Image 1 (cartoon, one colour):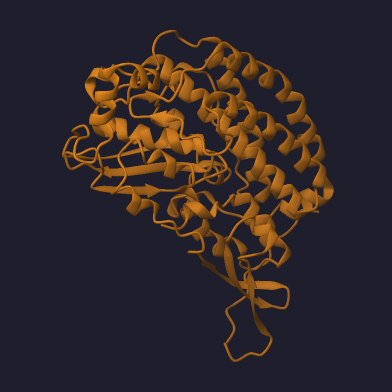
Image 2: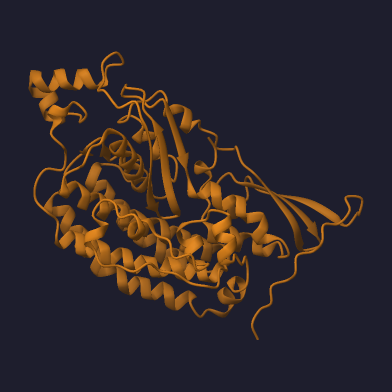
Length: 406
């Protein structure tokens, strides 16, 4: 018999003694980070929830007004720290639109490969920890074993497993080598069997299904009205994906599907992420086998691209150019203009609004992080459910606290 969603209870009078207030977080292990929820309870039933953010305040938007367009990439690593490469790519995608820069084809392909590998890493953590919170420990181990392989790949790429800071204005820190290409091919070959293992553990697991079906339902209209995006919106039937709707990088060259569902509950959000994992593998396979030759950076003579480190250390021209770009009273010119550019990050639309004032530092840098939007939907999703459903709904939204606090 299908589960029936409980009707939300009417808000009771504050004087009623059986209404309890419970702090969920900021140190609760199921929040995975410093999130706090103030829950109002009628017994086990949640009648209201108030998200309380600010525990990871870092001022990352204000920092955008003080760091230049290359330096700020280190801050983006700390936003959605589950997939920092996606943030790197999203930031410089917006900067290059402001500056009118078109990166070389090889750079576009490499960024596309890394964006999809980051999506795989993000979805694996979301699926693994969401299952762990509901008691499925084995699926968590399978997911994290795959993520470890991806971290090794990122370390081979740029020397960092976590804070990558890999992109630059007009290009990349380094080009990829053949060893990286072969490691990616090995990962792609090993991924489908392990994906199937996770699916067999969870898709028809009675406990997992009972804990997720009919829980935290978000309708298509509500998803649109709340500005949801990514897997959260697509699980509710919103067929929106910037990779298809507004193709950027090299996505227009590849064949892949937009994964959607109609249930809008925790279980459907899980299924959408699992389907997207396979589509990401398909994109990376096409990109890695058709990787074009050529440079990964624009011509450094345009004074927007940092020169290669070997030239800085060995030639006076490279040293002078580096000096001109990084000194506070030099820098490269930018248009006195504004722009908004967004990418399809693992959690949804990651957008940056930039205002240029003619210098190499943004006058205003505004971020549109998907976690901030989705966390605001949480109270609506949890009302009428029980305390045990809080971890299920929260895990399906994949809230990253570092994106919330400005």
